[in-house]
Length: 275
Length: 262
Image (cartoon, rainbow over all chains, first blue to last red; front, top):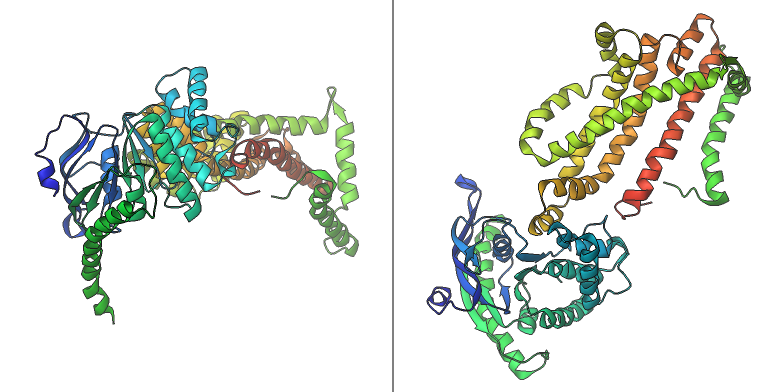
Protein backbone atom coordinates (compact mmCIF):
# COMPACT_ATOMS: atom_id res chain seq x y z
CA UNK A 1 0.00 0.00 0.00
CA UNK A 2 0.92 3.61 -0.48
CA UNK A 3 2.10 4.38 3.02
CA UNK A 4 4.67 1.58 3.04
CA UNK A 5 6.09 3.06 -0.10
CA UNK A 6 7.34 6.05 1.85
CA UNK A 7 9.62 3.91 3.96
CA UNK A 8 11.63 2.52 1.07
CA UNK A 9 14.82 4.15 -0.14
CA UNK A 10 14.48 7.56 -1.75
CA UNK A 11 17.77 7.70 -3.62
CA UNK A 12 16.47 7.40 -7.17
CA UNK A 13 13.05 9.00 -6.80
CA UNK A 14 12.37 11.80 -9.26
CA UNK A 15 8.91 12.75 -8.12
CA UNK A 16 7.43 12.09 -4.74
CA UNK A 17 3.98 12.76 -3.36
CA UNK A 18 3.82 12.87 0.42
CA UNK A 19 0.45 12.53 2.16
CA UNK A 20 -1.20 14.74 -0.41
CA UNK A 21 -4.71 15.82 0.50
CA UNK A 22 -6.95 18.03 -1.57
CA UNK A 23 -10.29 19.59 -0.67
CA UNK A 24 -12.35 21.82 -2.90
CA UNK A 25 -14.76 24.47 -1.69
CA UNK A 26 -15.60 25.21 1.93
CA UNK A 27 -18.37 24.76 4.48
CA UNK A 28 -21.24 22.58 3.31
CA UNK A 29 -19.91 22.82 -0.26
CA UNK A 30 -16.65 21.17 0.77
CA UNK A 31 -15.62 18.17 -1.30
CA UNK A 32 -12.74 15.93 -0.35
CA UNK A 33 -11.21 14.89 -3.65
CA UNK A 34 -7.98 13.33 -2.42
CA UNK A 35 -7.70 11.93 1.09
CA UNK A 36 -4.12 10.79 1.32
CA UNK A 37 -1.80 9.89 -1.52
CA UNK A 38 1.87 8.97 -1.21
CA UNK A 39 3.98 7.32 -3.88
CA UNK A 40 7.23 7.79 -5.75
CA UNK A 41 8.22 7.88 -9.36
CA UNK A 42 11.79 6.90 -10.21
CA UNK A 43 14.10 8.64 -12.67
CA UNK A 44 13.17 7.84 -16.30
CA UNK A 45 10.25 5.80 -15.08
CA UNK A 46 6.96 5.63 -16.94
CA UNK A 47 4.38 5.84 -14.18
CA UNK A 48 0.66 5.56 -14.95
CA UNK A 49 -2.12 6.49 -12.56
CA UNK A 50 -5.44 4.71 -12.99
CA UNK A 51 -8.61 4.98 -10.98
CA UNK A 52 -12.38 5.00 -11.30
CA UNK A 53 -13.76 8.07 -13.02
CA UNK A 54 -14.07 11.11 -10.80
CA UNK A 55 -11.51 9.77 -8.37
CA UNK A 56 -9.23 12.78 -8.60
CA UNK A 57 -6.43 11.44 -10.79
CA UNK A 58 -6.44 14.55 -12.95
CA UNK A 59 -6.53 16.65 -9.79
CA UNK A 60 -3.39 14.88 -8.65
CA UNK A 61 -1.70 15.72 -11.96
CA UNK A 62 -2.80 19.37 -11.65
CA UNK A 63 -1.24 19.43 -8.20
CA UNK A 64 2.01 18.08 -9.63
CA UNK A 65 1.84 20.73 -12.35
CA UNK A 66 1.31 23.44 -9.75
CA UNK A 67 -2.03 24.58 -11.22
CA UNK A 68 -3.58 23.76 -7.86
CA UNK A 69 -2.14 23.61 -4.35
CA UNK A 70 -2.64 20.62 -2.05
CA UNK A 71 -4.68 21.29 1.11
CA UNK A 72 -1.97 19.45 3.01
CA UNK A 73 1.00 17.29 2.20
CA UNK A 74 3.48 18.05 -0.54
CA UNK A 75 4.81 16.99 -3.90
CA UNK A 76 8.56 16.99 -4.46
CA UNK A 77 10.37 17.12 -7.76
CA UNK A 78 14.08 16.26 -7.40
CA UNK A 79 13.60 16.78 -3.66
CA UNK A 80 12.25 20.32 -4.11
CA UNK A 81 8.70 21.17 -3.09
CA UNK A 82 6.40 22.14 -5.96
CA UNK A 83 4.92 25.59 -5.29
CA UNK A 84 3.53 26.53 -8.69
CA UNK A 85 3.79 25.88 -12.39
CA UNK A 86 7.26 25.91 -13.90
CA UNK A 87 9.35 24.85 -16.89
CA UNK A 88 10.90 21.89 -15.04
CA UNK A 89 7.64 20.16 -15.96
CA UNK A 90 6.03 19.59 -19.34
CA UNK A 91 2.26 19.21 -19.48
CA UNK A 92 0.29 17.39 -22.17
CA UNK A 93 -3.43 18.21 -22.12
CA UNK A 94 -6.31 15.95 -23.04
CA UNK A 95 -7.73 18.58 -25.39
CA UNK A 96 -4.25 19.44 -26.74
CA UNK A 97 -4.40 23.14 -25.74
CA UNK A 98 -2.36 24.20 -28.76
CA UNK A 99 -2.22 27.89 -29.63
CA UNK A 100 -4.43 28.29 -32.71
CA UNK A 101 -2.59 31.47 -33.71
CA UNK A 102 0.79 29.79 -33.80
CA UNK A 103 2.07 27.42 -36.46
CA UNK A 104 3.26 23.95 -35.44
CA UNK A 105 6.82 25.26 -35.36
CA UNK A 106 5.94 28.31 -33.25
CA UNK A 107 3.87 26.22 -30.85
CA UNK A 108 6.83 23.92 -30.23
CA UNK A 109 9.38 26.75 -30.10
CA UNK A 110 7.30 28.89 -27.73
CA UNK A 111 8.56 27.30 -24.52
CA UNK A 112 12.15 27.74 -25.60
CA UNK A 113 11.57 31.37 -26.51
CA UNK A 114 10.05 31.98 -23.09
CA UNK A 115 13.17 30.42 -21.58
CA UNK A 116 15.15 33.10 -23.38
CA UNK A 117 16.56 30.94 -26.15
CA UNK A 118 17.24 33.09 -29.19
CA UNK A 119 14.50 32.78 -31.81
CA UNK A 120 16.59 31.18 -34.52
CA UNK A 121 18.09 28.63 -32.17
CA UNK A 122 14.67 27.94 -30.64
CA UNK A 123 13.23 27.21 -34.07
CA UNK A 124 16.14 24.94 -34.91
CA UNK A 125 15.66 22.91 -31.75
CA UNK A 126 11.89 22.85 -32.25
CA UNK A 127 12.41 21.48 -35.74
CA UNK A 128 14.39 18.57 -34.31
CA UNK A 129 11.55 17.76 -31.91
CA UNK A 130 9.00 17.99 -34.70
CA UNK A 131 11.12 15.59 -36.70
CA UNK A 132 11.34 13.09 -33.84
CA UNK A 133 7.59 13.20 -33.23
CA UNK A 134 6.97 12.52 -36.92
CA UNK A 135 5.57 15.82 -38.11
CA UNK A 136 8.25 16.84 -40.59
CA UNK A 137 6.66 18.85 -43.37
CA UNK A 138 3.93 20.32 -41.12
CA UNK A 139 6.10 22.97 -39.46
CA UNK A 140 4.18 25.84 -41.01
CA UNK A 141 0.68 24.38 -40.63
CA UNK A 142 -1.79 25.90 -38.22
CA UNK A 143 -3.27 23.52 -35.61
CA UNK A 144 -6.83 23.73 -36.96
CA UNK A 145 -5.68 22.02 -40.16
CA UNK A 146 -4.33 18.97 -38.28
CA UNK A 147 -6.09 15.77 -37.19
CA UNK A 148 -6.48 14.95 -33.50
CA UNK A 149 -3.54 12.55 -33.49
CA UNK A 150 -1.29 15.10 -35.18
CA UNK A 151 -2.39 17.79 -32.77
CA UNK A 152 -1.37 15.66 -29.83
CA UNK A 153 1.99 14.99 -31.50
CA UNK A 154 2.47 18.74 -31.45
CA UNK A 155 1.32 18.78 -27.83
CA UNK A 156 3.96 16.23 -26.89
CA UNK A 157 6.71 17.92 -28.91
CA UNK A 158 5.82 21.25 -27.31
CA UNK A 159 6.05 19.80 -23.81
CA UNK A 160 9.37 18.10 -24.56
CA UNK A 161 11.02 20.94 -26.49
CA UNK A 162 12.21 22.95 -23.51
CA UNK A 163 13.54 19.80 -21.89
CA UNK A 164 11.58 19.55 -18.66
CA UNK A 165 12.56 17.10 -15.93
CA UNK A 166 9.25 15.29 -16.10
CA UNK A 167 6.36 14.93 -18.51
CA UNK A 168 2.87 15.15 -17.01
CA UNK A 169 0.20 13.72 -19.28
CA UNK A 170 -3.54 14.07 -18.60
CA UNK A 171 -5.38 11.38 -20.58
CA UNK A 172 -3.53 12.63 -23.65
CA UNK A 173 -5.18 10.20 -26.06
CA UNK A 174 -8.61 10.25 -24.43
CA UNK A 175 -10.24 12.18 -27.24
CA UNK A 176 -8.71 10.15 -30.09
CA UNK A 177 -10.35 7.27 -31.93
CA UNK A 178 -9.28 3.72 -31.06
CA UNK A 179 -6.94 3.22 -34.03
CA UNK A 180 -5.15 6.54 -33.58
CA UNK A 181 -4.94 5.90 -29.85
CA UNK A 182 -3.03 2.64 -30.35
CA UNK A 183 -0.71 4.25 -32.86
CA UNK A 184 -0.05 7.18 -30.56
CA UNK A 185 0.71 4.90 -27.62
CA UNK A 186 3.38 3.18 -29.72
CA UNK A 187 4.70 6.52 -30.89
CA UNK A 188 4.81 7.86 -27.35
CA UNK A 189 6.91 4.90 -26.20
CA UNK A 190 9.27 5.40 -29.14
CA UNK A 191 9.72 9.08 -28.27
CA UNK A 192 10.00 8.29 -24.59
CA UNK A 193 12.80 5.81 -25.27
CA UNK A 194 14.46 8.43 -27.46
CA UNK A 195 14.40 11.15 -24.79
CA UNK A 196 14.43 8.96 -21.67
CA UNK A 197 12.17 11.17 -19.60
CA UNK A 198 10.28 10.56 -16.40
CA UNK A 199 6.56 10.38 -17.20
CA UNK A 200 3.53 10.70 -14.97
CA UNK A 201 0.53 9.66 -17.02
CA UNK A 202 -3.15 9.66 -16.09
CA UNK A 203 -5.70 7.39 -17.75
CA UNK A 204 -8.86 5.47 -16.88
CA UNK A 205 -7.90 2.68 -19.30
CA UNK A 206 -6.28 -0.36 -17.74
CA UNK A 207 -5.42 -1.65 -21.21
CA UNK A 208 -3.48 1.51 -21.88
CA UNK A 209 -1.84 1.54 -18.46
CA UNK A 210 -0.62 -2.03 -18.82
CA UNK A 211 0.71 -1.36 -22.30
CA UNK A 212 2.67 1.75 -21.33
CA UNK A 213 3.76 1.65 -17.71
CA UNK A 214 6.79 0.60 -15.74
CA UNK A 215 4.65 1.14 -12.68
CA UNK A 216 0.93 1.55 -12.24
CA UNK A 217 -0.56 3.40 -9.30
CA UNK A 218 -4.18 2.36 -8.74
CA UNK A 219 -6.30 4.89 -6.86
CA UNK A 220 -9.45 4.22 -4.86
CA UNK A 221 -12.81 5.86 -5.49
CA UNK A 222 -13.18 9.37 -4.14
CA UNK A 223 -11.87 10.49 -1.72
CA UNK A 224 -8.86 8.82 -3.22
CA UNK A 225 -6.05 6.92 -1.61
CA UNK A 226 -3.51 4.60 -3.16
CA UNK A 227 -5.22 1.25 -3.63
CA UNK A 228 -2.16 -0.54 -4.83
CA UNK A 229 1.01 -0.21 -6.89
CA UNK A 230 1.85 -2.70 -9.63
CA UNK A 231 5.32 -2.82 -11.14
CA UNK A 232 5.49 -4.14 -14.68
CA UNK A 233 8.73 -5.46 -16.12
CA UNK A 234 7.42 -6.97 -19.35
CA UNK A 235 9.80 -5.92 -22.15
CA UNK A 236 8.52 -3.48 -24.78
CA UNK A 237 6.96 -3.47 -27.30
CA UNK A 238 4.26 -5.33 -25.43
CA UNK A 239 1.64 -7.43 -27.10
CA UNK A 240 -1.99 -7.08 -26.09
CA UNK A 241 -2.38 -10.88 -26.30
CA UNK A 242 0.80 -11.86 -24.47
CA UNK A 243 0.14 -14.02 -21.40
CA UNK A 244 2.22 -11.90 -19.04
CA UNK A 245 0.48 -8.80 -20.28
CA UNK A 246 -2.94 -10.32 -19.71
CA UNK A 247 -1.93 -11.51 -16.27
CA UNK A 248 -0.83 -8.04 -15.13
CA UNK A 249 -3.87 -6.47 -16.74
CA UNK A 250 -6.15 -8.78 -14.76
CA UNK A 251 -4.32 -7.94 -11.56
CA UNK A 252 -4.85 -4.20 -12.11
CA UNK A 253 -8.44 -4.73 -13.20
CA UNK A 254 -9.04 -6.70 -10.02
CA UNK A 255 -7.83 -3.81 -7.90
CA UNK A 256 -9.82 -1.32 -9.90
CA UNK A 257 -13.07 -3.31 -10.07
CA UNK A 258 -13.53 -3.25 -6.31
CA UNK A 259 -13.26 0.52 -6.41
CA UNK A 260 -15.55 0.95 -9.37
CA UNK A 261 -18.16 -1.11 -7.52
CA UNK A 262 -17.63 0.95 -4.40
CA UNK A 263 -18.08 4.14 -6.35
CA UNK A 264 -21.25 2.68 -7.85
CA UNK A 265 -22.62 1.58 -4.47
CA UNK A 266 -22.16 5.09 -3.17
CA UNK A 267 -24.32 6.42 -5.98
CA UNK A 268 -27.00 3.79 -5.36
CA UNK A 269 -28.92 5.38 -2.43
CA UNK A 270 -29.15 8.53 -4.48
CA UNK A 271 -30.45 6.58 -7.44
CA UNK A 272 -33.07 4.63 -5.46
CA UNK A 273 -34.20 7.85 -3.82
CA UNK A 274 -35.14 9.09 -7.25
CA UNK A 275 -37.69 6.36 -8.09
CA UNK B 1 -19.32 35.85 -44.48
CA UNK B 2 -19.74 35.19 -48.18
CA UNK B 3 -16.79 34.50 -50.36
CA UNK B 4 -16.08 37.74 -52.16
CA UNK B 5 -13.60 36.28 -54.59
CA UNK B 6 -14.47 35.87 -58.22
CA UNK B 7 -17.32 37.03 -60.37
CA UNK B 8 -19.97 35.07 -58.48
CA UNK B 9 -18.92 36.62 -55.20
CA UNK B 10 -19.04 40.07 -56.77
CA UNK B 11 -22.62 39.58 -57.96
CA UNK B 12 -23.67 38.15 -54.60
CA UNK B 13 -22.27 41.26 -53.04
CA UNK B 14 -24.11 43.56 -55.51
CA UNK B 15 -27.55 41.97 -55.15
CA UNK B 16 -28.52 43.55 -51.81
CA UNK B 17 -27.25 46.94 -52.94
CA UNK B 18 -29.11 46.83 -56.25
CA UNK B 19 -32.24 45.70 -54.41
CA UNK B 20 -32.00 48.63 -52.02
CA UNK B 21 -31.64 51.11 -54.89
CA UNK B 22 -34.54 49.45 -56.71
CA UNK B 23 -36.81 49.77 -53.67
CA UNK B 24 -35.75 53.37 -53.26
CA UNK B 25 -36.56 54.09 -56.91
CA UNK B 26 -39.92 52.31 -56.58
CA UNK B 27 -40.89 54.33 -53.50
CA UNK B 28 -39.87 57.50 -55.34
CA UNK B 29 -41.96 56.61 -58.42
CA UNK B 30 -44.98 55.80 -56.28
CA UNK B 31 -44.59 59.24 -54.75
CA UNK B 32 -45.49 58.04 -51.25
CA UNK B 33 -42.99 60.28 -49.51
CA UNK B 34 -43.21 63.77 -50.93
CA UNK B 35 -39.70 64.94 -50.07
CA UNK B 36 -37.85 61.82 -51.21
CA UNK B 37 -35.37 62.43 -54.02
CA UNK B 38 -34.74 59.72 -56.59
CA UNK B 39 -31.53 57.68 -56.38
CA UNK B 40 -30.44 59.49 -59.52
CA UNK B 41 -30.96 62.91 -57.91
CA UNK B 42 -29.00 61.89 -54.85
CA UNK B 43 -26.12 60.51 -56.87
CA UNK B 44 -26.16 63.57 -59.15
CA UNK B 45 -25.80 65.65 -56.06
CA UNK B 46 -22.83 63.48 -55.01
CA UNK B 47 -21.19 64.02 -58.37
CA UNK B 48 -21.70 67.77 -58.23
CA UNK B 49 -20.29 67.84 -54.69
CA UNK B 50 -17.26 66.03 -56.00
CA UNK B 51 -16.92 68.55 -58.84
CA UNK B 52 -17.54 71.76 -56.89
CA UNK B 53 -14.34 73.13 -55.43
CA UNK B 54 -13.70 75.48 -52.61
CA UNK B 55 -10.11 76.67 -52.08
CA UNK B 56 -9.00 74.12 -54.65
CA UNK B 57 -10.44 71.14 -52.75
CA UNK B 58 -13.67 69.43 -53.88
CA UNK B 59 -16.48 69.98 -51.35
CA UNK B 60 -17.11 66.27 -51.06
CA UNK B 61 -13.52 65.58 -50.17
CA UNK B 62 -13.57 68.37 -47.59
CA UNK B 63 -16.52 66.99 -45.70
CA UNK B 64 -15.52 63.36 -46.00
CA UNK B 65 -11.85 64.08 -45.26
CA UNK B 66 -12.64 66.08 -42.13
CA UNK B 67 -15.01 63.40 -40.83
CA UNK B 68 -12.54 60.60 -41.55
CA UNK B 69 -9.79 62.50 -39.79
CA UNK B 70 -11.97 62.83 -36.67
CA UNK B 71 -13.01 59.19 -36.88
CA UNK B 72 -9.40 58.05 -37.19
CA UNK B 73 -8.40 59.97 -34.08
CA UNK B 74 -11.40 58.96 -31.96
CA UNK B 75 -11.44 55.36 -33.09
CA UNK B 76 -7.69 54.84 -32.67
CA UNK B 77 -7.88 56.32 -29.21
CA UNK B 78 -10.77 54.01 -28.31
CA UNK B 79 -8.84 51.02 -29.63
CA UNK B 80 -5.51 51.89 -28.01
CA UNK B 81 -7.08 52.40 -24.60
CA UNK B 82 -9.96 49.93 -24.85
CA UNK B 83 -8.04 46.80 -25.83
CA UNK B 84 -5.41 46.94 -23.04
CA UNK B 85 -8.02 47.89 -20.45
CA UNK B 86 -10.23 45.05 -21.64
CA UNK B 87 -7.32 42.60 -21.38
CA UNK B 88 -6.64 43.84 -17.86
CA UNK B 89 -10.30 43.48 -16.89
CA UNK B 90 -10.37 39.98 -18.27
CA UNK B 91 -7.15 39.03 -16.54
CA UNK B 92 -7.50 40.65 -13.14
CA UNK B 93 -10.49 39.84 -10.99
CA UNK B 94 -10.17 43.04 -8.96
CA UNK B 95 -9.96 45.38 -11.93
CA UNK B 96 -13.01 43.64 -13.31
CA UNK B 97 -14.81 43.85 -9.99
CA UNK B 98 -14.19 47.60 -9.80
CA UNK B 99 -14.93 48.51 -13.41
CA UNK B 100 -17.71 46.19 -14.44
CA UNK B 101 -20.50 47.97 -12.51
CA UNK B 102 -19.30 51.27 -13.96
CA UNK B 103 -19.44 49.83 -17.43
CA UNK B 104 -22.91 48.41 -16.89
CA UNK B 105 -24.08 51.88 -15.88
CA UNK B 106 -22.39 53.79 -18.67
CA UNK B 107 -22.93 51.31 -21.52
CA UNK B 108 -26.62 52.10 -22.14
CA UNK B 109 -25.99 55.88 -22.26
CA UNK B 110 -26.32 57.20 -25.80
CA UNK B 111 -23.07 58.87 -26.77
CA UNK B 112 -24.98 61.95 -27.84
CA UNK B 113 -26.05 62.52 -24.24
CA UNK B 114 -22.44 63.36 -23.47
CA UNK B 115 -22.12 65.98 -26.18
CA UNK B 116 -23.78 68.93 -24.39
CA UNK B 117 -21.44 68.35 -21.44
CA UNK B 118 -18.44 68.10 -23.75
CA UNK B 119 -19.57 71.31 -25.45
CA UNK B 120 -19.45 73.15 -22.13
CA UNK B 121 -16.02 71.76 -21.27
CA UNK B 122 -14.30 71.82 -24.66
CA UNK B 123 -16.52 74.10 -26.74
CA UNK B 124 -17.35 73.71 -30.41
CA UNK B 125 -14.84 71.93 -32.58
CA UNK B 126 -12.67 68.91 -33.13
CA UNK B 127 -11.92 68.00 -29.51
CA UNK B 128 -15.57 67.62 -28.57
CA UNK B 129 -16.28 65.55 -31.68
CA UNK B 130 -13.24 63.32 -31.28
CA UNK B 131 -14.06 62.63 -27.63
CA UNK B 132 -17.65 61.80 -28.60
CA UNK B 133 -16.33 59.30 -31.17
CA UNK B 134 -13.96 57.90 -28.58
CA UNK B 135 -16.81 57.40 -26.11
CA UNK B 136 -18.87 55.80 -28.83
CA UNK B 137 -16.29 53.09 -29.51
CA UNK B 138 -14.42 52.73 -26.24
CA UNK B 139 -17.00 50.87 -24.18
CA UNK B 140 -17.86 48.23 -26.73
CA UNK B 141 -14.18 47.57 -27.47
CA UNK B 142 -13.27 47.27 -23.78
CA UNK B 143 -16.30 45.20 -22.90
CA UNK B 144 -15.86 42.77 -25.77
CA UNK B 145 -12.13 42.39 -25.15
CA UNK B 146 -12.74 41.58 -21.48
CA UNK B 147 -15.38 39.03 -22.45
CA UNK B 148 -12.95 37.52 -24.94
CA UNK B 149 -10.22 37.08 -22.34
CA UNK B 150 -12.61 35.34 -19.99
CA UNK B 151 -13.54 33.00 -22.80
CA UNK B 152 -9.98 31.82 -23.42
CA UNK B 153 -9.52 28.11 -22.73
CA UNK B 154 -7.87 27.91 -19.31
CA UNK B 155 -5.53 25.19 -20.52
CA UNK B 156 -3.97 27.67 -22.97
CA UNK B 157 -3.08 29.88 -20.02
CA UNK B 158 -1.93 26.90 -17.95
CA UNK B 159 0.34 25.71 -20.76
CA UNK B 160 2.03 29.11 -20.88
CA UNK B 161 2.33 29.16 -17.08
CA UNK B 162 4.05 25.78 -17.17
CA UNK B 163 6.54 27.09 -19.71
CA UNK B 164 7.29 29.95 -17.34
CA UNK B 165 5.67 32.80 -19.28
CA UNK B 166 6.06 36.27 -17.76
CA UNK B 167 3.04 38.53 -17.30
CA UNK B 168 4.00 40.58 -20.35
CA UNK B 169 4.35 37.47 -22.52
CA UNK B 170 1.01 36.25 -21.24
CA UNK B 171 -0.55 39.60 -22.11
CA UNK B 172 0.80 40.08 -25.61
CA UNK B 173 1.23 36.52 -26.85
CA UNK B 174 -1.63 34.62 -25.22
CA UNK B 175 -4.39 36.94 -24.05
CA UNK B 176 -4.39 39.31 -27.02
CA UNK B 177 -4.44 36.72 -29.81
CA UNK B 178 -6.62 34.44 -27.69
CA UNK B 179 -9.34 37.07 -27.36
CA UNK B 180 -9.04 38.28 -30.96
CA UNK B 181 -12.45 36.97 -32.04
CA UNK B 182 -14.12 39.17 -29.42
CA UNK B 183 -11.75 42.09 -29.97
CA UNK B 184 -12.73 42.14 -33.63
CA UNK B 185 -16.42 41.88 -32.74
CA UNK B 186 -15.92 44.90 -30.49
CA UNK B 187 -14.08 46.85 -33.19
CA UNK B 188 -16.82 46.07 -35.69
CA UNK B 189 -19.49 47.43 -33.34
CA UNK B 190 -17.28 50.39 -32.55
CA UNK B 191 -17.06 51.36 -36.23
CA UNK B 192 -20.83 51.72 -36.28
CA UNK B 193 -21.01 53.48 -32.93
CA UNK B 194 -18.28 55.93 -33.78
CA UNK B 195 -19.97 57.03 -37.02
CA UNK B 196 -23.20 57.54 -35.14
CA UNK B 197 -21.37 59.57 -32.55
CA UNK B 198 -19.56 61.54 -35.22
CA UNK B 199 -22.68 62.53 -37.13
CA UNK B 200 -24.52 63.54 -33.98
CA UNK B 201 -21.60 65.45 -32.56
CA UNK B 202 -20.89 67.21 -35.85
CA UNK B 203 -24.47 68.39 -36.02
CA UNK B 204 -24.09 69.99 -32.62
CA UNK B 205 -20.45 70.96 -32.46
CA UNK B 206 -18.98 71.38 -35.91
CA UNK B 207 -18.38 74.71 -37.57
CA UNK B 208 -19.32 73.95 -41.14
CA UNK B 209 -17.24 70.92 -42.04
CA UNK B 210 -17.85 67.18 -41.84
CA UNK B 211 -20.59 64.92 -43.18
CA UNK B 212 -22.77 65.42 -40.11
CA UNK B 213 -22.79 69.17 -40.32
CA UNK B 214 -23.26 68.96 -44.08
CA UNK B 215 -26.51 67.05 -43.53
CA UNK B 216 -27.57 69.39 -40.77
CA UNK B 217 -26.87 72.53 -42.83
CA UNK B 218 -28.94 71.10 -45.69
CA UNK B 219 -31.94 71.41 -43.40
CA UNK B 220 -31.78 75.20 -43.57
CA UNK B 221 -32.30 75.06 -47.35
CA UNK B 222 -34.61 72.04 -47.26
CA UNK B 223 -32.06 70.46 -49.59
CA UNK B 224 -33.30 66.89 -49.33
CA UNK B 225 -31.01 65.60 -52.04
CA UNK B 226 -28.06 66.90 -49.98
CA UNK B 227 -29.33 65.00 -46.98
CA UNK B 228 -29.66 61.77 -48.90
CA UNK B 229 -26.26 62.29 -50.48
CA UNK B 230 -24.97 62.58 -46.91
CA UNK B 231 -26.66 59.34 -45.89
CA UNK B 232 -25.08 57.55 -48.84
CA UNK B 233 -21.67 58.92 -47.87
CA UNK B 234 -22.02 57.62 -44.31
CA UNK B 235 -23.10 54.22 -45.52
CA UNK B 236 -20.16 54.07 -47.90
CA UNK B 237 -17.76 55.23 -45.17
CA UNK B 238 -18.91 52.47 -42.83
CA UNK B 239 -18.54 49.99 -45.66
CA UNK B 240 -15.03 51.20 -46.48
CA UNK B 241 -13.94 50.78 -42.87
CA UNK B 242 -15.44 47.31 -42.67
CA UNK B 243 -13.88 46.28 -45.97
CA UNK B 244 -10.44 47.81 -45.58
CA UNK B 245 -9.89 47.69 -41.83
CA UNK B 246 -11.99 45.05 -40.07
CA UNK B 247 -12.10 42.37 -42.77
CA UNK B 248 -8.36 42.37 -43.54
CA UNK B 249 -7.66 42.20 -39.81
CA UNK B 250 -10.08 39.31 -39.50
CA UNK B 251 -8.64 37.52 -42.48
CA UNK B 252 -5.09 37.84 -41.26
CA UNK B 253 -5.85 36.71 -37.73
CA UNK B 254 -8.82 34.68 -36.55
CA UNK B 255 -9.82 33.28 -39.93
CA UNK B 256 -6.29 32.22 -40.75
CA UNK B 257 -6.01 30.63 -37.32
CA UNK B 258 -9.27 28.73 -37.74
CA UNK B 259 -10.79 30.46 -34.70
CA UNK B 260 -13.90 31.45 -36.64
CA UNK B 261 -15.74 29.95 -39.57
CA UNK B 262 -15.86 31.54 -43.01
